[in-house]
Image 1 (cartoon, one colour):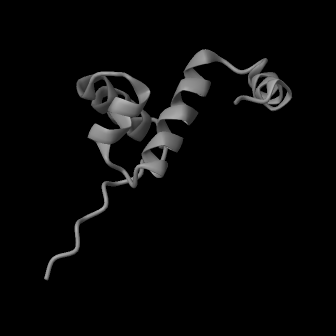
Image 2 (image 1 turned 90 degrees about the horizontal axis):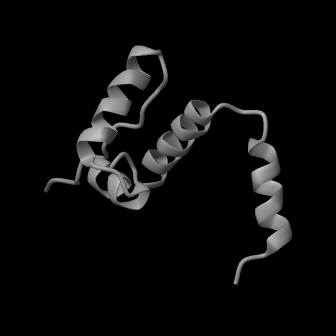
Length: 75
């Protein structure tokens, strides 16, 4: 069950920010949450993996730090 007041507080923090800035922050946060797993992040964001890769390339070109995929442990 969602708490209206906490949801409203999140929305209020977004007011005044541009949509591209909010989108970038959401994508980068999702990549951090998924340990850099692009496929999982794209599914969570409900966007095509190609779209995610294009956005990642753009963010890297703009100088943003993009989480790299975690490497599986090898034995």
